[in-house]
Length: 282
Image 1 (cartoon, rainbow, N blue to C red):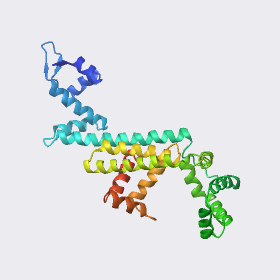
Image 2 (image 1 turned 30 degrees about the vertical axis):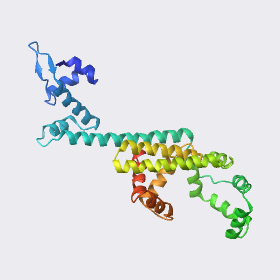
Image 3 (image 1 turned 30 degrees about the horizontal axis):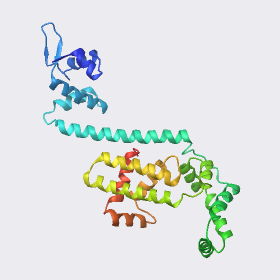
Image 4 (image 1 turned 180 degrees about the vertical axis):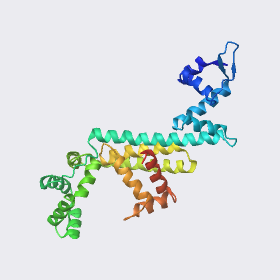
């Protein structure tokens, strides 16, 4: 048996709160001593734990009392419901934390300032410089000339929606320019990231088969880290949510989705899309 003071210390609830629970009939002490002191056994502590779970779900005390007094009340089902609630809350907090990181790093700044000609030419010069003859010929075949390609790209980069997309992806115009002007990843680094990506997808497959949410969320975290390094961005939230939308509501080119479904099983892209949404609380 534990005294009301012991229970208060164990749970963090105040003695006054425990007394109030007794007064409203929510949690009666197991027995009273001759001096009138409240004592609680293990069963009472288990009931108190359930009450605290319901409180975490922001259910009013009067409703908690009705739920627990209901003859059809199923403790195990109540715990499963609470677990789902906590997972959802954790995922929502993940999303909030990512958003805070975004703001601190300047991501998602709602700037609609388009890239100017100087910015665009810097990006193009850097991109075209290492291209071999075959790549240049391919550009000429598709656009007519390299200059025509440059004009088309400049038009693309001055589109307000496209500009906003890049700002959200990289965090700012400056960060996009900085990333665009970096030397490309070497083949060894690219192969490492590609191998990681395969391992992450295989982890999603295992998680889908086992129904293990912890493995699923760990896979999303790894995917975010892999994406950041591959794309050279500070935060993968915006891009992964875009990918999730595409996986859940396929549109446009679905070649990648079809390839993944063929290799890893039907429904894997939908599973990954839903997992990303849950992880970011979207």
